[in-house]
Image: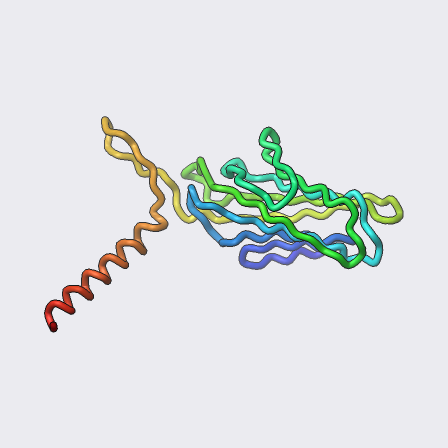
Length: 178
């Protein structure tokens, strides 16, 4: 059993089934949409049956949609019944979430993916992968006491202000020389 960890992909290679979970970004802010791509590959020369993939979403996630499968809100889990998976074949599913209600002391959220299967000899097997997404900002700024509070994410404010500043400098230089 080998686990490969890359920037924002974790791949677990088990006895017969390789399972990988990849996020479309290494870090995120509250309110941002995040896409997980879960890939599964039958690496054996045997067919696998009863292949079942389950994604346990973090508490800080609100499920949006998936390319296939079912989401169970009470369990906070997304499931996909793959069924039979022929030898040396693979598949994938995309799950989209929005990050919400991230506590100020949380610096990463964790998502786990598990796949269970049965091989041709009726042996049960499984594979597990996980994704750690780092939180790059928190919505914890509140207006002064007595006024209405507001939440915002400082992920966008610095680049936005930098662009405004550059535009202002260009306009001032252009006015001076033209």
